[in-house]
Image 1 (cartoon, rainbow, N blue to C red):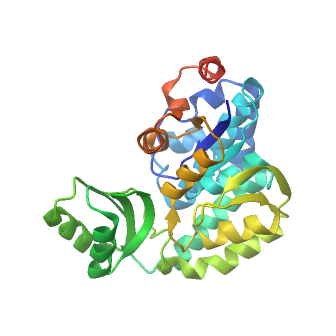
Image 2: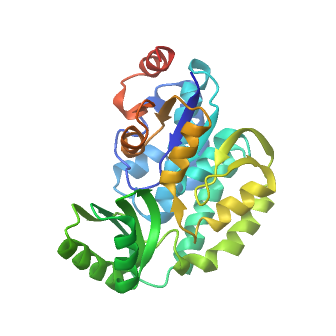
Length: 302
């Protein structure tokens, strides 16, 4: 059995996303450390409905993932590979040891601030499914936006200014798309509109002192395995304004021998995608279990 960890991006925040971490000393301690960056306890931010504002969402998601892994780490085999989706790629480097947990959460906060500053105005992301990728690309170009994330052969996320996304939604609906969903994210992540955030974020990453890591993290924009250091700085900064190839990353995970994928959450969207894309690879999310022991029993039984 070879274990891979899936770390989603923002958008799936929920009141229960901290439950497993809070129930263990290791996880609770990491959440307490994250509170210094967030300016409030993560649970309080969830309780007051602030969890989807970009500068809260990104560090909150990273903190939850790092804390969940802290609660699970001693109960599971060491992962062979880490796959992070959007800001989840930063959290993956935190788990791999490229950055300390505190630095990872602080970098997520800085990433969000830089993305907000670069954002040209009302903008965001649109999830589409049910049309071939070539049609989605043409549709995006016609509407004035672009493909931000490729999740599968007929499943992508478009990013761009708000009016362009509205036009894309209308075109996709008329073309017969089965899913047309505006995502709860207010920046056009992984598109050219955020190019202004790339260089300053690279500077912030380099200043945090990235270390070599023992566990590879797949770069979302290329699927290449990264082992920390300067390569992590380049991968994490460039992906802010470049298209993510998530479907390619899943395929690479299987090529590298992963037979079990565990999604740290929040949510279970990545494990569902993995089950669709990788027949024979077992994938589940921490959100499906009540306890850390339940997670450990499932992984041990694979």
